[in-house]
Length: 227
Image (cartoon, rainbow, N blue to C red; front, top):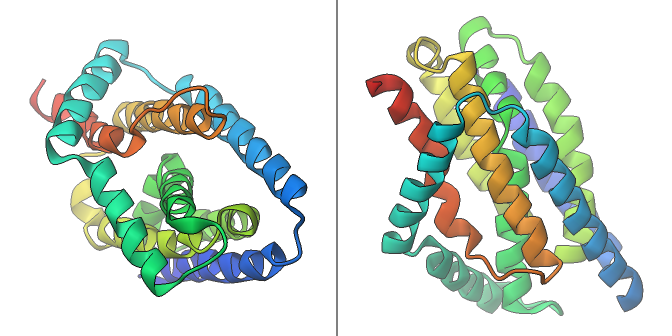
């Protein structure tokens, strides 16, 4: 049942480790250029994903409600504190901020999106893993690029992906009747907005506390269940 999830997680770990080794030989000016390339890629992912949304009012309300919850909990602060703790155990040249940024960016890119939902559902319901195996190749390559420029924080995002997709796989039979196509599309659109904000942050155009918007990803589920 969890074969696809495990392979996906291992792909992220392996790609991250390769990226960390590659990082040691990258000159600073190339590293900065890679960061800009990653930011532009995040903008592309965010913009293209927005077209999947089907219920504009649900998406807007999800962002408003989600960020309110996130601000109350202050997820962004907690992630940065986690980055500080990781930096104390795994010191590197990029500093604790890069660990937090690497963890946030890679977690959002690899855990948010339709494939992260449909793939685990396929594994749990049918025992086949085509979507997750395809996603594993994509995430492996992505993690190489991310880790080469953003450091060890990318490696720890594999844990988030494993837990997130593992839970969906485990409860696939129950979630299949709940997660309709319109709901998945709206979740994907909300996630795309968050990734778009992440790209703007990396380009230093904005200073949005991206992690405080993460609860918004789950709000569309409530709209479809109760309305």
